[in-house]
Amino acid sequence: MNQLRFLILGGTGFVGKMLVPRLVNRGYKVILIGRSKTKINNIFPSIEFTNYQELEKIISAEDIVVNLAVINNNQNISIEDFRAINVHFAHRIAAISAAKGAAHFINISSVHALCENPKSAYAITKKEAMYALQKISNMPVSHLFLPSIYGDKFSGKLRFLNYCH
Image (cartoon, rainbow, N blue to C red; front, top):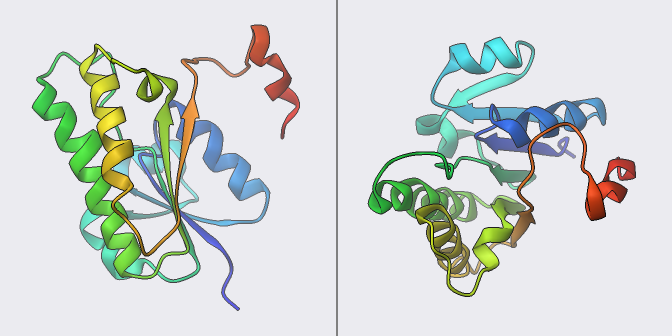
């Protein structure tokens, strides 16, 4: 049996910098998928890398694909630019993962996607991605909705999560 692998897109962001070391420390095989080998090697020099174009060639039935690739709320761009990454890219990667037989696709999202009437381009497109990914029927797709966080510890009502590792 092959070792369970996590293929992580967008792993050099805030969440990825916290997630990748935890997966590696638990003995999982991690492959980072991104645009810049230099950037990934600067942050995670010992982690295997491939680019987005090669993703389809490496996905296998044992893989869990984790999507952290996103245009963040602090970008001053059009909603169509947000949509290109946050919706269309996420759906395309999930569809490729499903076609290649990946075991699971995990879309890391934001609680902003759960708003009834989102206002920002970020929140609107994260909600649209949630609905677009529902169209993937031949592979489990999960969404993990994170609160607005930044830092290495949770505080307030979420501080109990500091003990969940």
